[in-house]
Image (cartoon, rainbow, N blue to C red; front, side, top):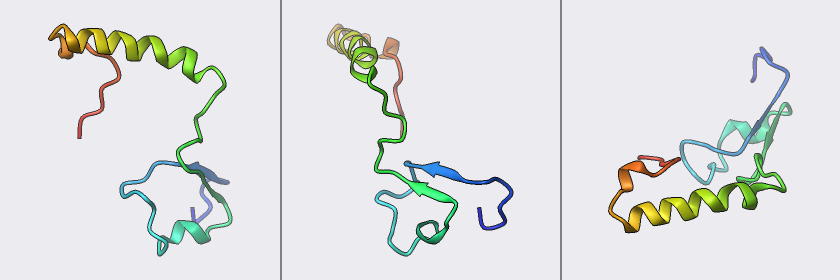
Length: 73
C-alpha cells in the first residue's frame, strides 16, 4: 500500500483483532478500515439464516462434519 502498487484497499479483517493503534495501516491515505461491516448486505440475514439453521440441525444430529462454512483456527 505504501508503494501504491494498487490504488487502495478496504480492510476489515486482520491477523490480530482489534487492529493495534500502532499499526501503520491507520496512517495510510489509501486504506479504509471498517469494523467487520465491509461485506454487509441488506440480504445478509435472509442468506445466512438457512445456513445457520441447517448447521444447527446437523450439529444436534451428530453430523457436524457435514456443516457448511466452518472456520477452523
